[in-house]
Length: 109
Image (cartoon, rainbow, N blue to C red):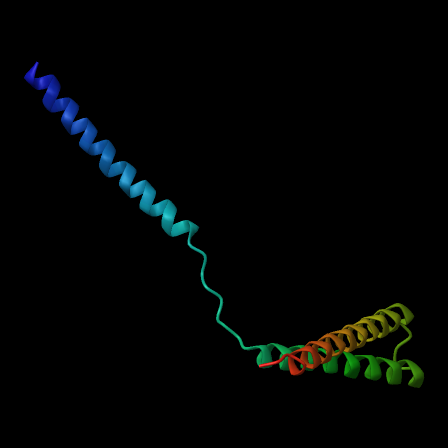
């Protein structure tokens, strides 16, 4: 009887240690790495740089197509659409920012 209780206590201790180890391992694996915090200004700058890069790519492809260096109309049209959509989105974001700025300026303090 004493042997059974000692064995049972040892079994419970082993299971508790195993459960704590598994719980800590699972908790560590579920932790998400925090993304570095970027300011609104940095985000806006990087977005504008990407839009500018798309515009430059479009212009380069137009020049190459016009000079006869490339004849891939599909890639040219895709780059033109990408650049056009990026400019439209940039204009929409600019409009929203200006609207928000005007609303903030009209707030009474």
